[in-house]
Image 1 (cartoon, rainbow over the protein chains, first blue to last red):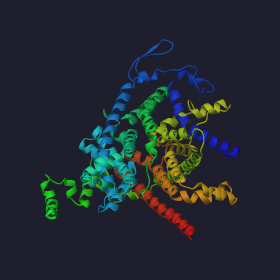
Image 2: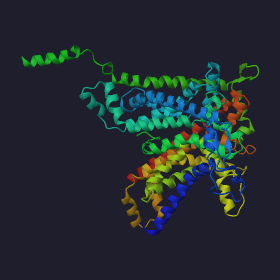
Image 3: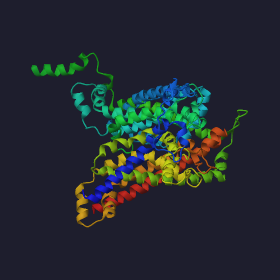
Length: 287
Length: 318
């Protein structure tokens, strides 16, 4: 590489890293900054001493500051902890159900000569174009009648409307990329048609199915609009609306920052661990 | 003798087995439909029905106090189309979509072109850029609240260290680009991965040839890179545009439509109308108009972009 090109590439790489990471790092720094630091001029990039008390306090425990002062648990700890638990339960249920129905459907759409195949694919594509705010209204009316608003079940159903079409779409484009004749070989070896799928195709697709599971979990964990409208203030409130109510009530930025870090840690860790699989996912087109 | 025995054995084999597995007895078409059936049922129950219900709501007017509902025909639609605020929010949505699309595409394309190079730390950068995407837009909004805030924001810290004073990024004149930057931050990684996958298929020799021909950087981009990524780029534009047109959570967290309605885009307006003013019919009617606009623009653009892309390759073939 010529020197000029090298300078451009490394400058670009630094800019991209900064653009991506600075907002996240700053949030983490804010969550451990003592409140009085914000009065300083200029605002420090790094606090003169760290205050780690927000995290145990948000998880419902007492915490001792560096000066020996004992602080009670945060008044929002119940809200945040329950939100995290509800989010985990809902996201796990959505992941399991959506995988169970999407994998067979995606497989059939990709590899079998099924009538109405094209229509099916187009319908799935069309459902992905519906703005979430448009489906909240019928769900809101329907859930109020059925007594499903403010429940985890209702939220799982609402999330499935987003996740299932997405997974079928991703899965179809993935199964279509497997070698032709894979099932035929399995059938020759004595598998039934169903076994050819469950014992040969699915194991061969494990990386992609992992990516699908991660995407299903992330989509549900991160979903905000349905969660806000159906479950705000209920016992089944997930993390995003819980954070929202804390966000608009609390004026101390450090505590909200710590709560945000707690809620964002699961998706960040999942995405970082499985990024190699996620990167290969074709979100967009079908060959 | 042996021949007949074999034939007999073969013919008897299926009957001799306890039973052929069910999945192997039925036709391919039936087997396929069987696998799709759960999704079809789920789609009917949780997509088709709510959509039909929303169409029904959009032609009714309900009174939140008495709980009565009456049929009003297309009144909700005509009312929306006749209201100045509706058109203002629709126009604002278009401006927002434009900002997000331009910013997001620049970041995604820049990142993809950069990650095509070989440099120290490339693998790290590839892994790290997935993070904003993993957060979704609501979380991106919360994260960027800590960048923009004049009291505790990173931007304030930078400008104070540089000797300036803290600026508020979310004033009525700057709020739309500021929101668009957050949206681009969250959505660009997907585009970067997507474009990079295509860029890696461009043969290096083409660039060498173009260099020999005396092409500059921009000319090489236009004549070598662009024809390859034209279609994926068009698809990405559709995706990010659709995302921006329906964005709600980001605006809810960062500005709640403010200051003074400067960031009240159509999805946020629908939210206010439906869930704060309790006018379900009007909200449903407006979301249908939004849906129609999004679909028409998407299909129109997609056909246009693909035809332009297709025309280009045919020219090259000749």
